Image 1 (tube, rainbow, N blue to C red):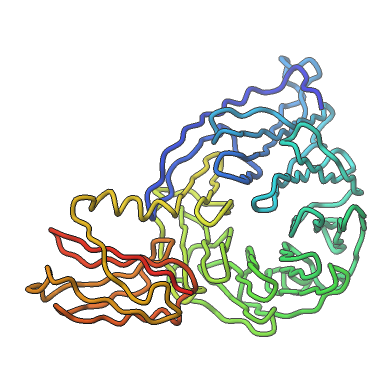
Image 2 (cartoon, one colour):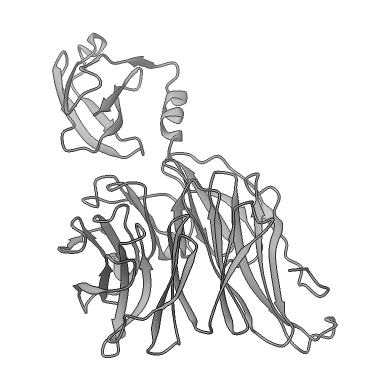
Length: 433
């Protein structure tokens, strides 16, 4: 829609800083509190926000009103340009809710409202054109897009009635009403048929239920209930493996499609607001008071990342296996997990030597021999890092010892090894098949 006079000025301050391992670095301050943000690569993303000018504003020719806008960047936040704009000079009938995308796909989805309609707008060309699907007047709750041919929208009348709207290969189904006893709050569809919804009831307003559908949202069954938990966000990296972030630092997990659930210990008490898993076992959760925690072993253990932030994170996501973003208010933070090895190798450039490891690649067990230069060192420690920088094993070794490294219980992937002292360090890499 065409921009009109009276739009409030929004200043976007954009800077980039290269991240270091284990630390989320300041990436961009967007000058206004965002409703949502999504990137599909390290440089290409969109953000949405709303603002309101009082009706009595004398500087506005029509007295004020409500406004919403979507901006995009193609160069890592250096330049943002408007790709979607809406206004309502009569009051507050315009609102932007959600920006979504399918990982590694050049398709963005924008969920907004215009007077009596909820609208899902889709662009495949960076916002130059949008295709819109208008829905009837109802409250927005959540949006989930498993692939570029399907999306699901959860909405309601604000009290007791809830609906699933489904887009399936070009066909819209406006109302899939399957909720008579539950009050859905948020959802996640890992594929076009399998979906999960977190819900409350009229008797217990705490979000304590999880419902599951295997029919593309048509029918739902309850697969989890715990009135002592307050569920806040969920992520399913596959149809059967899923994690749910809760209030007070609690996390639950299923590996069998919701038939059974594990209670995981994070060691933190913050409310957990957003969750993203890169694969079945490696994931990140963002929460209140600047907390970001990570796991590389399916939630068995968690470690805290350094953010330097005291405000609460509202969203965390990754565009690939290395580049991640986290949003708090108007500020976006970024991490590059692949920087771990580069930093270590730079730090020890004059000290490192290569370890001989065999067999390599391995299917679980491999061997290495302590370098002869460490013959008189009695307190050497061998560290094994996964590709995301977490230490998965630490072994005290003796000089001239043949060491057995067992990766049978570790996920497949690349692992890095260090043995050294303050004068010399040996490094190696293992490919675990």
